[in-house]
Length: 223
Ligand SMILES: Nc1ncnc2c1ncn2[C@@H]1O[C@H](COP(=O)(O)OP(=O)(O)O)[C@@H](O)[C@H]1O
Ligand SMILES: [Mg+2]
Image (cartoon, rainbow, N blue to C red; front, side):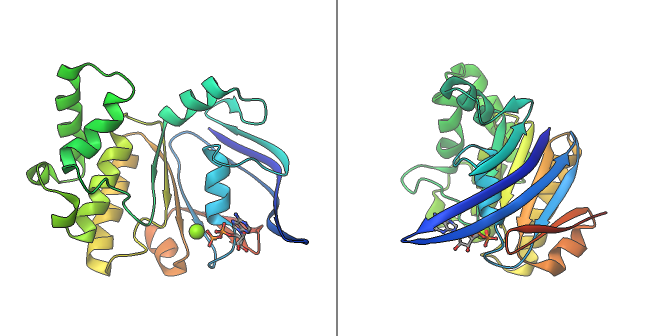
């Protein structure tokens, strides 16, 4: 499902080289729920970006969903991304479109049939408990609702893998708990989940396998 072998990522900031990931290796098998934690600046976002090929490693091998990323062609990268759902700290909803349109959009761009789009969008909205808000605009949503809409958009193509980068970093505890429940439901329905959070307490609360990054090194893998 996911395999990293000796992965390094170094950023050049002027003359200075900053190692964001140092010799990271691990495997995630299909169906796992893995929490990726560590303090701010530990390399969590950098690692996730490598997994959906938004960036490339300085050294090392990565394979995701059976696709070796170093040798992946553009078409293969596009296919890989269609199988990955991603959510960020910010919902990144398009402000001028309704919730429904925000979610339908990702199906339209890949040419899904019109008749199937409605059914799929409402399936996704139901999965996140947001059916009643389909016609709302992002500005009318609470932050928790906006994140649930972002989750609906992430799962509407029925991804094999969900990557979540601090999806509850901006919202209060009660709403965050709802989001965690939704992500657990998505996992239970068969999607592999990699959930990044700097909140160590949350990692414990989720009671799943936890990878800990510190200064770009994988220092713990437990559970
Ligand atoms: N594009 C970039 N250019 C330079 N340094 C970067 C860049 N992206 C990340 N970094 C550095 O890499 C390290 C890891 O960052 P990041 O992956 O964002 O950590 P986290 O998500 O765990 O907070 C930090 O030191 C950060 O400043
Ligand atoms: Mg981050």
